[in-house]
Length: 212
Length: 212
DNA sequence: CACACAATCGGACCGAAGTCCGTTTAGTAC
DNA sequence: GTACTAAACGGACTTCGGTCCGATTGTGTG
Image (cartoon, rainbow over all chains, first blue to last red; front, side, top):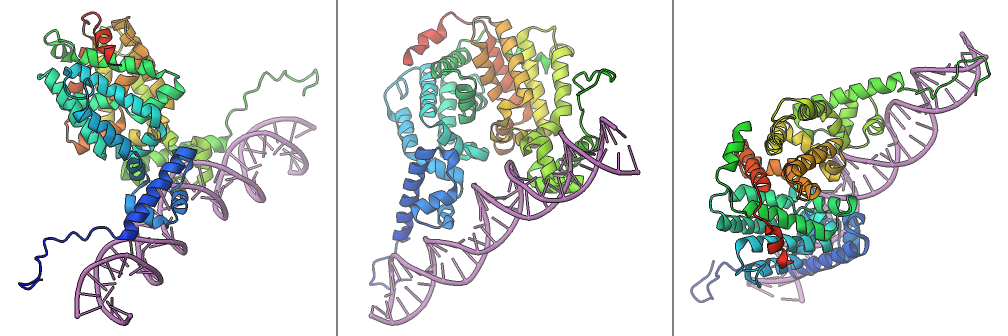
């Protein structure tokens, strides 16, 4: 590989080729613009490829699928939100009691959905939701808060169930089809979380569990 | 339309043509068989049409979409379950207190998912879940039980949120990907419902709601 | 600068859902 | 039995997500 006189080659990361990263940026830009202009449902992948000035194969090689492209378009606002959760001010960030943080978290997600519902729905298509990076972060965050607030509960399962109430599909159904205003959804979330984390009269689940 | 001597034509319901209903039955039979044999994800609509001995156009004219066909295949076991909920024995049917009925309902849905997850997932594709007949029944049922157990709550919103924890997508994710056993999912549901319907220390949601 | 090679490109291609429309047929009236 | 019509039929067609592979090009080397 090298003789004694050259600089040692330390796992030289090749780095992406110039045209590759340029095309990646072009595609993201075109996708973001078209999604915003016409709505994600009215933009095909061919269309994005053409607008970006690349072949369709390139779009799929870079992003793998339509859902993944939508996730990539969202990733900026997404990391911003995650940053606020992890290092931001209370009650969203650390400092507030877990119940309040959980409430603030759900309200934050609902706000996020309110601005990008269609795009987030596209990013969650076909089970992509569960394998996405943000979902992993959310799951860990909610489970941690639950465990902190009530060490006796099944935080893993409850976290996943609580997150199920914050999907884009349900949000769109509630807002558009059933015409429930955003504020009522937030109130519903507060109600749900408050009840889940209220002090439990001992042994309720066990007593009712007889129906199994 | 008629002279005075003929029998009056009283909004004569035409009824379906013989070939139409025969084809409908054939398609349902073929779809049920193929879905069961190969799994819903490995059966195309062309394939079902061929197996039923009809053209693809006929399949779509009868059922409208893949999701709707899956719903039709499920409808028998579905109505059975609904019958049990409405007129069956307690705690699933009437007679038990609402909290226990709600727990039994969720456990019943989870059992249903355990036997038909893939097919139910196919039936819920693309927002079809919310517009399906069963979802309407479930929503009304859960909202009624919630209102009965706690007249002060937002039963509509809570019902929709609780149902969100019983989707096929989440079930498949929890069972297959995260390897959570059925019994733990049921325990999670019991825990969730018990907490939501436990006696509320007054004013929790309002106190916490300051984070909005 | 010429070369080599690996990474990238791009568009032809594929399978599947859903639509369209010319053709066929069940049911009815005579 | 014949004629008529509304309904149903069926398969060609369109669109779209995703794959494949031969052509192209960026980049490091001598």
